[in-house]
Amino acid sequence: MLSNSIHSIFQQFNKLTKHLRLWEKNSKTIIYGAGNIGQDVYRVLKNNGIDVIGFLDQKVTQICYWEGVPIINPHNHQLSFDKIKKINVIVAIHNRDVEIPPIINMLKSLGFEHIITLIEFYDEFGKEMGERFWLTSRIDYLPFQSVIEEAFDIWEDEASKNLYKSILEFRLTGEYNILPKPNMGHQYFPLDLPEWKKPVRFIDCGAFAGDTLSCLIKNDIPIESIAAFEPDQENFKKLSNFVSNNLNKLKNTALWPCGVYSSTCQMHFTSGKGEASLLTTKGNSVIQCLSLDEVIPDFAPNLIKMDIEGAEYEALLGARNIIT
Image 1 (cartoon, one colour):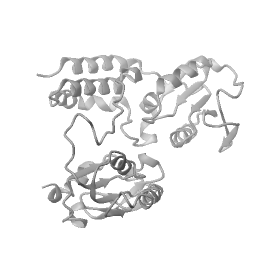
Image 2: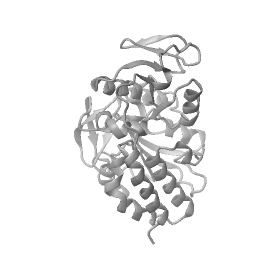
Image 3: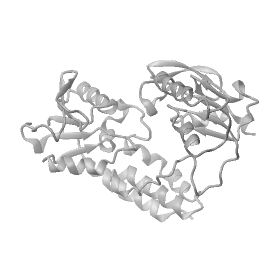
Image 4: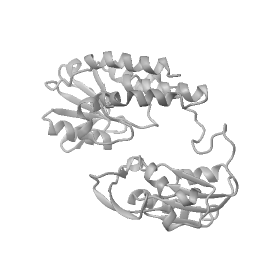
């Protein structure tokens, strides 16, 4: 039966769309966070003629500059911006390891009143910011309302249904406090699922810097063989160093500086964004992609992990024979 709770979330959002906060383009703007996202936000605002007068970042110890714009620590420096209550402050953080509500509370304590999260920012500038995990204009969900509602009934257990509902409500309202506290166990080795067959013959697609391989070691999981794929050059260097430093535990490990896809081909890739690097039509580089069926047809894995920023479907098509 179609969930009334999911339907009611969309009804509330439809009312909200009439009152989505309009961008105050005449106000000066400060960006909280001077990392990759903050720099992208700055470029988008600059292209739209919006004045950015500074960055706030708690990691800096003394005032510094990026493209001539000052970066200051909000705790260590006296903020002297005029009419602080009218300044737009964009929280340019989208990181699973950073809690957003405490940042918002801190900014409010400094006197800022017009605080904009990335969820709100994407309502107006999503197309210019480009794909970044699940971030998009919230209006983009509306054409898929019926599919999203139907998907609710696919989940069989209450925990999954509640999580699905909470994530949807969070994405449409932008209220971070709606999300439940995360389970701090490792995502690939959950305690509430049967253990993987051991020793593992592991294919790691999107191996990053070796974080999942590190968890194999920490959990004392016996390893028979590993094939790891990571197309981002900086990530691959870190991955290679990690494996080199753990050769006694990571037996029979082969590393591939390539992406994983439905066929062996070359594709555009946005690199240099750490975990957020991904295949895209407007990437800043071209990478080699491989089909698992074509390059390691006889590997015979008993565990395949894919964390490849939206390319999972194509990669699964390229692994049909291995999975079968």
